Length: 389
Image (cartoon, rainbow, N blue to C red; front, side):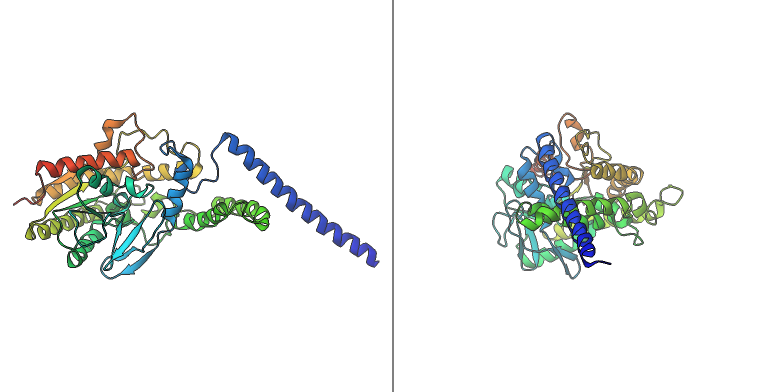
């Protein structure tokens, strides 16, 4: 074959590829700019688009800061947060104990808060977490010992560790319940949906955070976005129902009451142990069963309305309503039979049906956290506590 013909076809193919690449990138960026006129795009987390966030850019930054949090293993409690300094999320490690957004990083705190991501404050800035708001209301120094996915057992161990390193507080609050069900019911046979999605969100967010920063990114991001969407569509993302398939929901969709009863017993015994330890130190102890949107009458029409990820998330968690209902109903009776009081906050947000309180099925926004902090303050001020004889 003539060399000129070969060269002609070769360079023609190269030109076609270049044309497609440039044309695709131009369409992507022009379309993105046009869409920005009508919609909020480039969200870091699907929850950013909710109306609950007044300032869109601040909300994006809050979730970016949350993604910087890393965990590393620690004996007896499994893991803890690494130190972090950022605009909206700040974590310090003091003598092996991680705390979020405490005003004074010293050994002396008036009230200790233990829990999972709801206490830590997933999706909100430091100043909008329950412990911080409580300190703002009361003027007391608070320690936020919340760590994402912690159960009552993790909290009990963290409480014991904290007693070794800090001066004893006036009061201790265990704010939990949801994680004890979800974490303890998870099947080891599946990789949680959030683990896979987080991997792909990381790819997307790295691109979003560097948009327009380089010539290469002009061509790179459109194809990253395409790959991201293809992976989300084709990958097997196990639902909440599948995660719990070998845990607390049987194959015939009936509840595994034996497993659930053990989880309830474990929850109450962990709180009872915490109460007895606190009582021996003359420290007030408060057990609080946290609220969640699944069992709540709070409004949810503003959640997930624009993003398939959010719709899927809430629909999957709603499939867990029977086991959550069983846990919340029976854990109160079980704890009361153990002769200590547990405060049921599961309906606390029901009285605010016109307001936007939740940012997802479990985590409250700033307004919701303020209501919780205020109610905790009322309980502590009333002199009621779980140190019953």
